[in-house]
Length: 304
Image 1 (tube, rainbow, N blue to C red):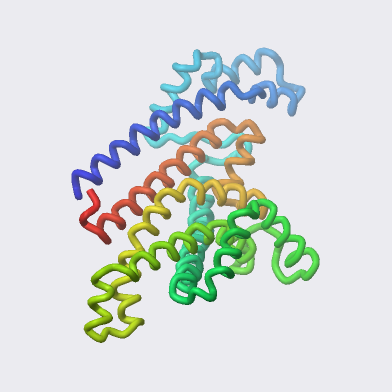
Image 2: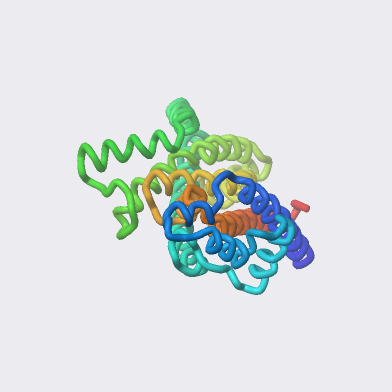
């Protein structure tokens, strides 16, 4: 297991390095020069001032030299300042990451809990299967951004029960968590139903029934652990999609998480902040996938 963890961590480091290079080049080639924008916002800046600013930020250097200088600074823990927010980048990333993890954690917990419950209902009560399948189809077909806007119009604008966006107490989490949860529970419901249906036909289940074990004991003790392995696989594969959904949801609900931060940084041509925020999101996603893989192997040691 230790060798596997070290190998996966090495892969994460290499992937993060490649991703940072590609993201740096793409962002550097985007239209909109930050110095030109600074001049446009302050007409008192002269051509000499612009040249000094370019030299100060290394913008007069070749792209590769700029990337190496940026990567070296990041490895030394010097993340620089955000031009858009006039704050150190590290001071912006910490609270934003905390906000996103709270949103993702709640949404994932609810999506797994509700999805597995619906899947178990469909597997153990065949009469409920059409309802669960219909709900899963609706959840899969409805785009999260459309659902988010609909919830805002209904619960914030029309009824006035919940805030439309921003961050504060638990009430600010309800609509974004519901949006993200509904978009992801379909996969867990469908796969839980299929996995439980298969698990209930296994020979050891029939043996447990023959020995007089209660149906509840059989489900909780034997069927659900077997069904948990494919569900963890789905969770690992969906980690990236869940993070992408959180980025869109945060933008819709104006939550100051990583998604909103990346959106603001890209729109404001704050390249340094956008790069580091993208890199943090990618690394967190890869670590979440590693955690799901390790949990999968712990649940079923036969997996290589």
